[in-house]
Image (cartoon, rainbow, N blue to C red; front, side, top):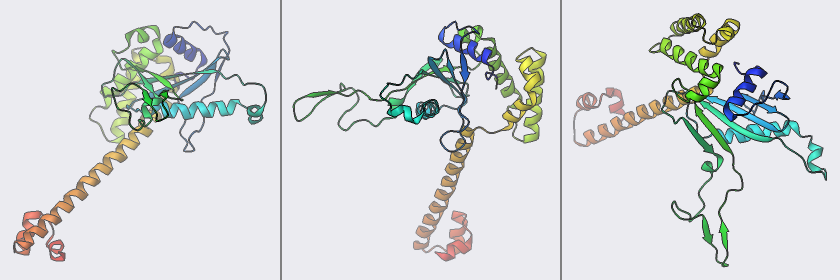
Length: 289
């Protein structure tokens, strides 16, 4: 939302890359409405100067699969740009060069800057181990350099408050966004009920407006921001599902352990009531054994 404005987005790109594109530079925002067939939309994508297609994502969780997601996003964007018949024409196509950036502001520790690569997801080739040069001799006496035929690099920036100070100082919106997130986290700390969270978020937005943090943006889009804050992110939803599955696994494992213990105690000729007391199982469950 914050960077859907072309001028703000151009400034952000200039900040990241050190470019100096002006307002006269042609720019088209082409953020995808739906990708992967499951309603998952990328955050920001645009072409600038008709030469570069840029994709920027924002994550509050660490996700090593982002290069894969970027690959699918950029493929979908290229597909939208190219007429199918052009693929079979004798003339070679010219594609805008892609660039990939990720802003991270999750709570888990993360480096100031790092690079994620698509090749990190590829399976290691059989017989090739860490520390051995990427050259293998075949049975017909020639060497093959094991280079990946497909690569995609994502530049990751930690934009939590206090990190990447050069970027924050250079781009006011980015710096104020980091402050806004920090204030929201302070207000919501320890709260779980929707009503409490809603009040905490309202106080955070009010405080930011009073202290001139994203003031104009929050005055205009305050209600939309409230709704987005109250929504659970896709990554958080997946993590909750995984946590739930882990808890269910623990409970099932504990139940199995109790039953196994009960069986052993029964072979020791303990009474049903003694076994029930020792394992915490209902006496009916012990009787079924």
